[in-house]
Figure 1 (cartoon, each protein chain N blue to C red):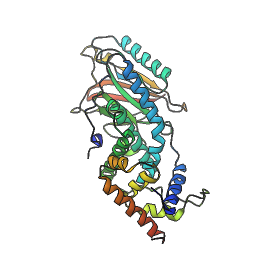
Figure 2: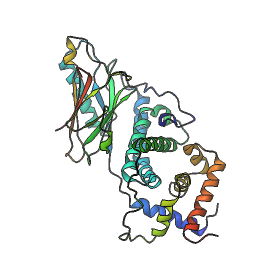
Figure 3: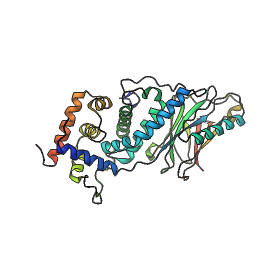
Figure 4: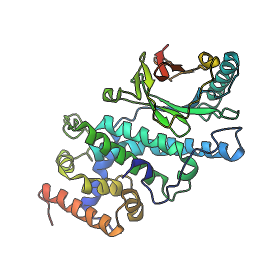
Length: 170
Length: 183
C-alpha cells in the first residue's frame, strides 16, 4: 500500500518521539518464595533457596525452576531505579513484581523495609509447615539488581494475620 | 474486559510445569520468553507511553503485562501475535489503573520540546497526536510506529479489521486537519 507523504511524516515523527523515550532496563528474576516441603527442616529450606539463587545467578535471566514436589514459585521483577516491589497472588504462588507507583502500596504491595500481611480469602497457594514447624517455614532470597543499589531480601513467613512478606533492602 | 483474558486464544494457564524438575521443553519455552522479552519490551514500552501519554504508566503496564505473559507463556507463545496479546493486557491493566485512580496523569505530550533536535520530530504533529482520542491514537501508533498489519492491530485491540482501517483513516485525517493540511 502506497503511503502518502503525510503518513511518511507521521512514521518519522513517531520514530523520533519513541527514540526520546528512555526504557529502563528491568530484569525479571524468577525465584522461590516459599518451599512447600512439609516437615522438613529450615536448614533444608535454606539449602533449596540458596540453590535457587545459584541457578538464577548462573542463568542470568531468571529461568529458575526449583525441583521438588509442591514447590511454590514466585516471580520477582526488580526495578533498580525505584527499589520497590509489589506482591500479588498468583496461580502458582505469590508473584512479586516491581512497581513504580506509590499508590500501589496496600494489602498486596510493599515498600522496601515494609512488612505486609497478606490477607486471607485469596487464592493462597503458598503453603507453610504444619505446626510446630511453622516457624521454620521461612525462605529467604536475595535478588541482586544490576546497579547494586537495590539488593532485596524477600522473606515469607507465617504471621498472626496470615502470611507475611518482608521486603528489605540489603 | 479482564486483562488476563484479552485474547481469543486464551486458555487456562495454570503454570503447569512450575513444579517438579525442569524438562527440556520447559527450558526451551523459558529461553523463548527471554528472547521475546528482550526483543519486544522496548517497543512495547514506547508504544504504551505514546498511546497512554504517560511514561510511568506505560512502563508499569508493560511490566505487568510481561509478567502475565510469563505466567502464561506456554499458551501465549503459541499465539499468532504474542506481542499483540501483551499490548492488549497492558492496555486493559492501564485502563483499570486509571479508572481506579480517577485522576489525570501528567502527559508526555506537554513537556518542553524545545531541546529536541531530531528534524523528524514535529511539535505541532505531536500536539495534534495528544489531542487525538485514544481510540484513534492507538491504531495509528500501532500502524505507523509498530508497523503492525491490520490483522495484528485488529487482534490486539479486539475490534474488527474494518473498524481498524476506519479508525486509522479518521485518525490520520484528524491529524492533518489539526495541522491545517486537510485534503
